[in-house]
Length: 102
Image (cartoon, rainbow, N blue to C red; front, side, top):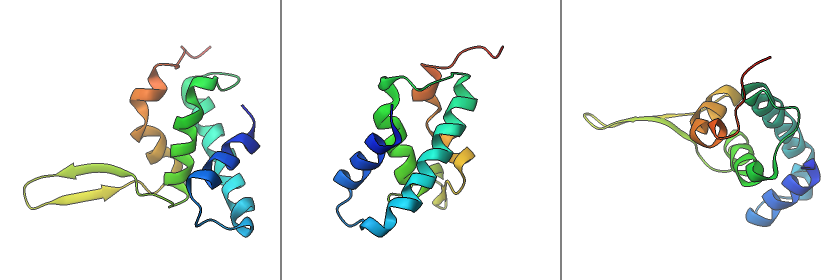
């Protein structure tokens, strides 16, 4: 999976982004890929995680909000703010690909 494919998909899904946003989005792509590889203990990302990575980058970049936790009584919503929070919010999808650490 190439960074440029991920960046192109993010720009396709978010027409409000400008070409000047590309370096910032690329930085978020690199950060998310690094965190996902560390979490899953994989050496390269499987194609099945493509849209998961796109969504994670969108959330980390603030293109869309990532709700980390909610509380009903007295309504409380916590938004993910770090790459670690975003990775943890996608645990169900990532765990399908996770391997034992060597």
